[in-house]
Every structure is written in structure tokens, then in C-alpha cells.
Length: 187
Image (cartoon, rainbow, N blue to C red; front, side):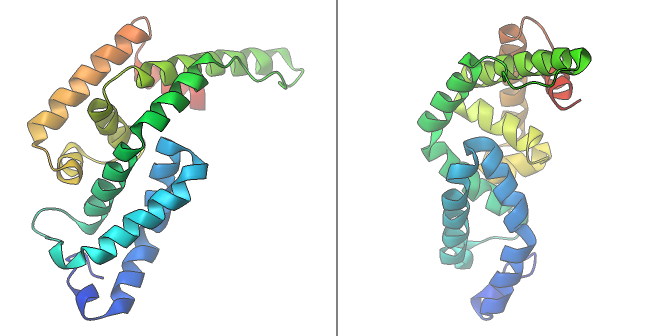
């Protein structure tokens, strides 16, 4: 399947090539959103829907990659209750008790874990539509234009949802910048 998506209608191998090109990226995104246990099923369903709807794919609206993110995000939306429960649970757990003996390492891990818990709880507290925008940008690395195409919403809506989400996240994190919280977790 070329980036215009038309080859897969007449050549099944073209869809296989598209699958190979995008599977890992879509899987990584879904695994970040729903956890690895649900990722396989959602990613499989994403590509099944893409295959079934490939005749309706419009390359003028979005690139294949963006189209796949849109399908995956819609499927993730069906699981939003599960995702919210998981994020709330992560926000309640304490730091991992099996930390190394080295004092600096322990302090760094406890600090990062504490920030992660706060971030997970804050994410659980924002509207699903806003969370989709934040996570498509933060986890998938999509641009505002790509998020708009993936979700089928105007670019201005992406920007307003992102702005609203940032404000709510900052307020939930005690005015700590959510980007810095993520950097501390990975740093």
C-alpha cells in the first residue's frame, strides 16, 4: 500500500507492506495508552478496520500513518473507562519498594515515581477528548495538523483542547510543568 492507499485494493501485498511499515509505531502508541495487555487486540483491530475500509481511505484528507492513528485513537476511546481506572490506580500506588541501595539512585527513583503518579492521576482527571490530543502529541509525536486529521477535527480544536489540557494538568500538578514532569520521569 503506497502512501496514497490505492494499491491495496488490487494488490494485497501492498496492504502487507503498509502493515509492516506502521505496525510497531501504532503498537507503541496503543501500548502507551492502554498498556501492553490490551495493545495486541486494539492494534489488530486497527489494521482489520483499515483493511476493511481501505476503499474509503482518502489520501487527500490524511497520510496513511495519520489515518491509522485516527482508527487506533477511536478504538482507544471505546476503552476510555478502562484507561481512566488504570490511570487512577497508577496514581494511587506508592514507589517501587525494590529500589537499589545507592542513596542517590533511590532518591531519584522515588522522586520520578512520585512525579509519574501525579501525572497519571492528573491525566485521569482530564476529559477523554483532551487526553487523546495530549497523548497523540506526547506519545505518538504527531503534529497538530496530523492530530486534527487523525481525530477528524479542525486544527483550532486541537489547539484549544491542548491548551485546556495543559491548564488542567498544570493545576493538578501544583503548577508544575507537565513536560518537566515527563522529563524528570525519563531523566
